[in-house]
Image (cartoon, rainbow, N blue to C red; front, top):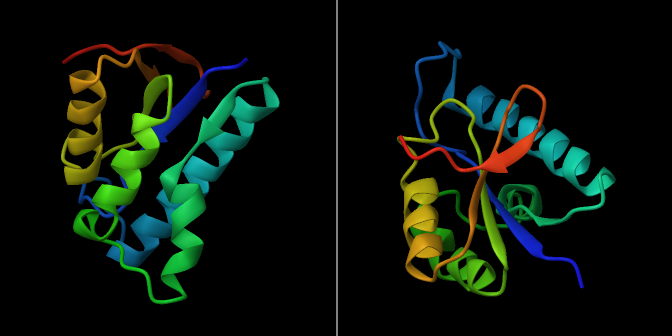
Length: 127
C-alpha cells in the first residue's frame, strides 16, 4: 500500500513577494498548490493537500484562518504516513504550516519538502 502524504503549504501568511493584495496572494498560492499536488499525484504518489481540498469550501461559508481548520487538518495528518511542505514564500511565517510541521514531528512522521520550482520532493532541510 502506498504511503499517504500530507502536503502542507502557506495560504494566508504574508510574504515579501510584493503581491498587490492578500486575495491575489491566496489565489496564486492556491494555483501553485494545485499544480504541485497534480504533479506529485501524476508521479504515482498519494497526496492530500488541505488547500486544494478546502479552499473551494470557503465559498460555502468555511473560514480561511488556521483556527478554522486546525482540528480538521491535524486529524488528516494523524492518518498520513508522511508529511511534506511545499516551500512557497511565506511557509516559515505561516501559523498553519508551522503548527502542522510541529504536530507531524511530534508523531514521528517522516518530513519531506517540495521544491516550488520543479515540485521535486526530498528530505526536509531543517533551517
